[in-house]
Length: 175
Image (cartoon, rainbow, N blue to C red; front, side, top):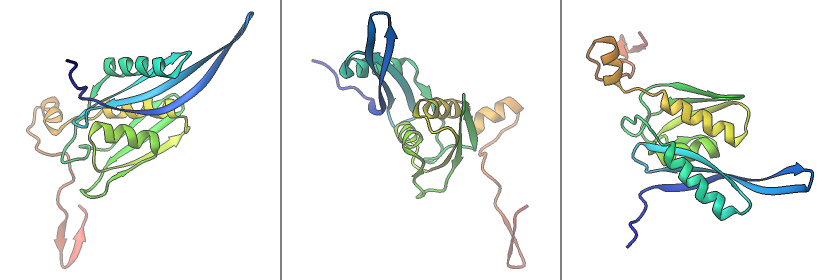
C-alpha cells in the first residue's frame, strides 16, 4: 500500500519552449512547481520534457531535493528580509496576526506552502515567475530565529521584534 504524500504541490508556471536544430524544432514543456508541507518546509522545482505530466513528475522530484526550512514565529517571519535572484528582488516583511498573505501569485503561493499565515511582500524588478520564485526561496533561506541570532552574538535573545512603544503624556514615543 502506497503511503500518502505529506507535501502539497502547486504549479506556478507552465511554458512551452522550443529548441531549433538542424533537423527542425523540438517542442518541450517547462513546469515550475512549488512544494511545501505548510509546517516550515518549502521548495521549488523545474521539469522539462515533451509532455506535461512527466515534466510535473520531474519538477516534484527536483522540489523535494531543494527543500528549505523556513523560520516561522506566530504565523509570520521573524524579521524583514530581501531575496535577490538575477533581476528579481523580493522584500518580505513580518505582519500582525490577521493580516493574511499580501503578495502576488508566485510569492504568495510559496509563502502559503511554507505555512506562513501573515506576511507583507513587495516584488521589485522583474515579474518573471521563475526569477521571483528563486528570489523568494533565497529570501526565506536568510531568515534566522532569535535564538540563532543570540548564539551568534553570545547573548540571550527572546524576540527580534521592536520593543514596546512608551506612552508619554498621552502621546506615543517611538524610541
